[in-house]
Image (tube, rainbow, N blue to C red; front, side, top):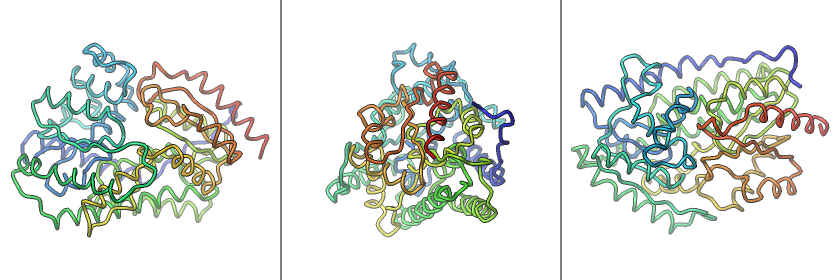
Length: 415
């Protein structure tokens, strides 16, 4: 069903600036680790990065490295290394890719950034289980292997309402991390610096949310596949002025696209929502496939996971707790359904695609009847694609293509 002359992929000019600041970030991490100029903390992607950054740590995010392993397809050779030491092929393929990378001493950072031999060795590992329990097991493996402390936050699951009691609990857990972090850093926490860092994170979050909001326009100026790349600063650099400056630049470019009527996909006919994780090793392939069908995959729960309206520099501990608790993945099924309904309405979505990621059950929301319930409620058709975030042995390119083309044909008959 693909067109004979598929549309060209439109490059976002700000990408060059993002590449520069991400390069500075990775080289900065490497310098901190190799020279000892700063202590290094590993942090889960929605962990207390603001606290770590305020205390002067250079912050590395293993999930970001996991995404790099997937997108560069290094993971294919690395996952079996972790399986060989006892980690099941059914658990998080970020985890198995990353541990495999360590065991095999192989990282795409070395190819992308000459002079970087490995990920930075941590002085402390800090996790938050709001995403899943795997992050705790992941970090504890490194704690034993590298003989460094692993500390963290145990978050509740299936949260209906983010109550004051839950916020109190998580805020106390974040505050309880401080003595260990002070001992590792060799310095006391400066509460004013923490307030400033949380305020910077809030501004970064607001701008990232504004970037994603531009997709409400017709035609959309960016796609989900663009978002998975441009979310890099929101993940790795929140709490810094560099991230804010970048998103101001990106937002200005996207708003200009809107003003000029320039769409990310030429001849946009359909507007699709992506629910779940990306298939990192197929980002370009999937982007080109949907573009060839004149279908814009323009919004997602995943990219929106780094929008934290609750951050408040005047109340850093409690606002961090609230922000981490409001995360979609933490919430109960009824909340998730209501959230998705709102997103389908706001972005005027014609169809929703659920990615059933083999090794990521926490981010696969198709397994307990959600597609059927939401379609009955909204009338928006759904397609479930089987795959995985990193393990390409779980991905069938031909089956994906056949299913997507049939789904698009079905949708076009409705519009």
